[in-house]
Every structure is written in C-alpha cells, then in structure tokens.
Image (cartoon, rainbow over all chains, first blue to last red; front, side, top):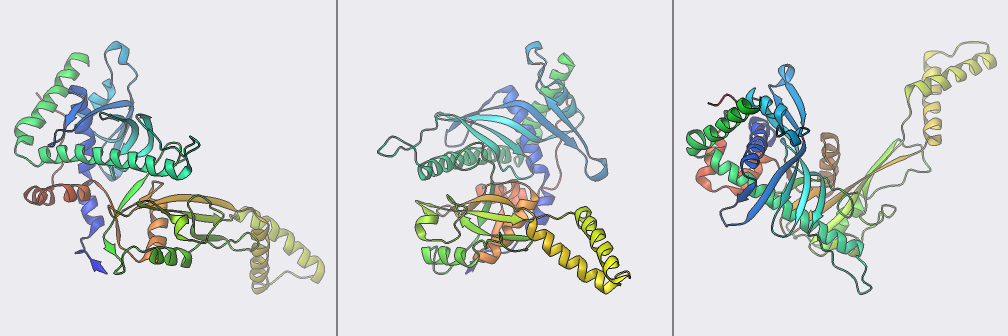
Length: 192
Length: 205
C-alpha cells in the first residue's frame, strides 16, 4: 500500500485549533459588512448567519463562552451581545448559517473545530432524478443529496481558502484586521 | 435522517492509503463481509458492532449491488447494545443471596457470590432488550473521502476503530488546518505551518 508521510495529526490539529474559530468569526463579521463572497475563479456565494452564535475565549478552566441570539433585529440591534463578546476577544465556535450559490441554498451548523457540517438542510434548488414511474428512488435520493452536500463542502472549503489567503498575507495585519476591528468598534460605539 | 432524507450531519475523512489491487468490488465486499454485523438477539452478549447494508440494516451480507451506487460506496455501521445497570443487578443479587441462605442456612462465600453474580448478569442480559444504533457511511471513491453520518468524538472513535480493522486503509479527519494544507499553494502552505499566534478581533479604533 502506498502511504503518505506521517504527520502527527492530533498535535497539528490542536496547535492550529484557533484557525476554525478565526475563520467563523471572520466569516460572520465579513458577512455582516457584505454577505457576497467571490472566489479566485469568479464563483459567487452569499452567506448569512441565522439566529444563534456561540462564542468563546480562553482555554481549560479559564474558558468562557456565551451563546447569542439574533433576537433584536427589528430594533436594528441584531447580534448586540455577540459584538460585545467579540470586543472582549471572544471568537465564534459554533454558528448556524445559510449559504447560497446561483442554483441552491443550504442551511447548516458549523462547529469551528472540524468545520464538518451538522443538520444540513437543502432549502432550495434541490432536484432529484426520477424513475420511469415519476418517483424518486432511494438510490437516486442518495446520489443527488450527496452531490449537493459535496457542493456545499466545496463552498465551505472555498470560503476557508479565501480566509486563509487573507490571514496568511501581509494585508491581514495592515488592512483586513483593522477593517473588521474598526467595524466592530464603530458598531459597538453606535449601538452599545 | 441523514444522507437520504432529513437534516444531514457528517464528518469528513481523507483516505490516504489505497489497496494495491484498487477499490475492486472483491476488496470492498470481502472486507465488509469479514467484519459484518453479527446478530446477538438470542444470546446474552452485551454488544455487537459491525457493518450492515445501507438500505437494509437487517442484512449483513454484501454483494456489489448492496454497496456500490455509481461513484459511491455506502453501508451502515450497526451497534447493538444491552445495558444492565448495577442497581438492577444488585437488586437481583440481594434476592439470590437470600434464597441461598434459605436453602443452605449459611451466607455465600466470596467465590460463590462472584459465581452467582456472573450467572445472574448473563441471565439478566439475555432478558434485557437490545438497543440498535446505526451510523451511515458514504465512501466517495473518486475524491478519496469517506463521510460518517454522525458527529462527536465517541462516534468518530467507534468508526475509526472498525474502519481500520476492516479495510486497513489510513484515514484522517478533515479539519481546518488539513483542508488548508490541501487547498493552498506551496508558499502559503508553509506560512500556514509556521503560523502559531491566534488573532483577535476586538479592541479596534
């Protein structure tokens, strides 16, 4: 059997566990500013966060977490608690969000540690192949649904790619981070 | 609920080893049959763990048409468990000890107590109902990924162990850093490996 060079996976995962938290926090803040994202090849998606965000800071016994609801949207003060938590250096560790491309829309929960989707729902654009009798077979449903989940996973990977390109570029410190920090600070000052 | 209907939760793994023979039906079917689920309904076994068909969890024999669906290979991991609480075991043990005293006029010694308890445990296990847990598994053969239709450490550990014993093919959980290493180009990949310090979004302006 051909075997890849072994890397201590668990150590690497734990050492970079903050990446998923930073990604979800960046994605949430960026989507609040402008919910359209474009990949290098020009593919466009829309992302917006639904009604629940869990944020956390610290590790071990000093870990502090808060679950925020987007409950005050009508008063223009949506995510007030979540913005305050970000100001206190908490980061998003779990979020319910919606993703839309040209053809389909999904809702899903993303945990920051793995970014493996939970409770994924296909909200729009899901067509299933039909048999001769017009019914959708179990096999057809499996193949089509898995294809839609693959499409969703590819979008999540593309969004992670956009984030990592920024995060690992000099522009992260000079442009992107000040832009988001400034936006959070202004929002908190104006709505806090 | 899962890959065919309802809300889907899945954990992605990268498969980083391939059998020298390729992913033939003989390889997949043979391995699945070797670790197929064994029914323990009529026994006093506490648990049984193995593979069953994707669309019929009562069937544990695998032919290609039961696991090959186009580019997908799919099956279920089935765990049947009987649970016996200490509280219940102790309740029946008290009754057994009382019967022993009534019949022999003496208390059971430690060896007898141990034998009584084991016999009682097996008897109670046989009488207790089985609980079945099914976890869907979908193998995306073209992209060398396998998806577990569940989340959480316990489910992952269960799956990883049985997968290893069955196929002997290395898999690795897909997480932000490993996905990053797969999708980024070389110079940026090196920066990702060197990245140590988290960033914070608070305290601007």
